[in-house]
Length: 205
Image 1: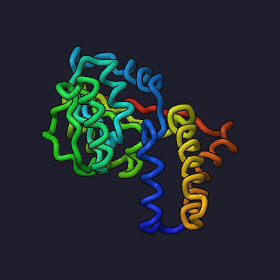
Image 2 (image 1 turned 60 degrees about the vertical axis):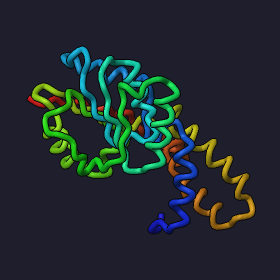
Image 3 (image 1 turned 180 degrees about the horizontal axis):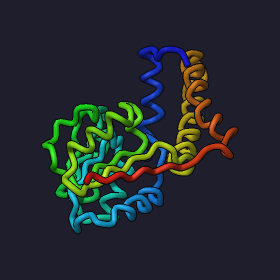
Image 4 (image 1 turned 180 degrees about the vertical axis):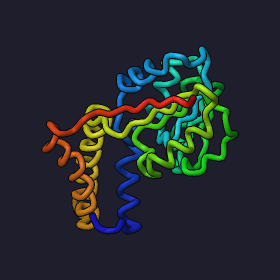
């Protein structure tokens, strides 16, 4: 793919903002990884980095009794999550904020669990590990993933791309951008035997 143009980002967010989550993952993956954080406190303080519209944030709220700070740099995603929290009566437990996971500006040592699904690769794992270490209390967990592919991510993505292809059927530039975006799920479909779902759970000493 060539360097993104301003129009690319318009189409990109038209696709991604309509999805239930903005990166690979599923509730089952979240629950399985959370189960590996065996010594977390009963009501953990959780930071969800790169939360998007909060698909996994809501799963964490269902699976724990903790308080959650959900952070994403894209303000429209945070606005959508904030509305969802109000609708579901979760605003007292989950704080949705605009912020940069590369510089989260949260107090050091203030979280029992730092979570990120399909986002940390954007800043590099080495940097993410350093940030996680600084944010965690001793014994806290950093859990992150970027490779659980289909039902909750690529299938909705393909459906949304098809919808926009119909909407923008007379717009050659939009169709070309959508074709570029469609290549990602198509590539993983072609090489699905080589794809794996990986969830990494680390712990601060």
